[in-house]
Length: 149
Image 1: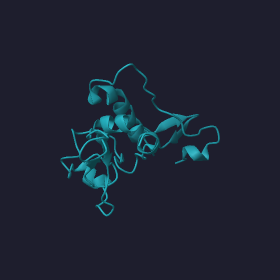
Image 2: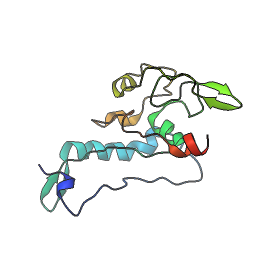
Image 3: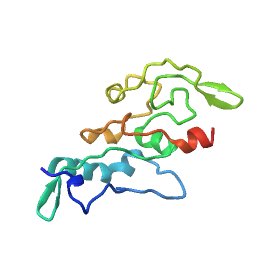
């Protein structure tokens, strides 16, 4: 089987971009078509010029509020909001601060099992897509973590 990287005309691309005046009301409803399409693509692959390509999703690029929404976790100012480790926040000078540096890391497996109940608001529909990793497939949000403090 070929990889998209073996095919010179195809390169990674954005699957979906959302823009609106307000956040979608339901994560399940918002992601339904994407999840169904990805499940089908993971199962059957993508056919291009009679060649079958395996579909891989390597990263979800989101700002912090969107990340917590689609992962169904507490918001970026919540008590157990760190997406990479199990640190609990402290509030200092009206800001959320992460004071611990040796907390256990979150893993894709512990996330899927909802082992830290304080971190989860629900069950993400993305877990229905085989191979989705809700910790390692989500890079940190530079804008909210660094630029906005």
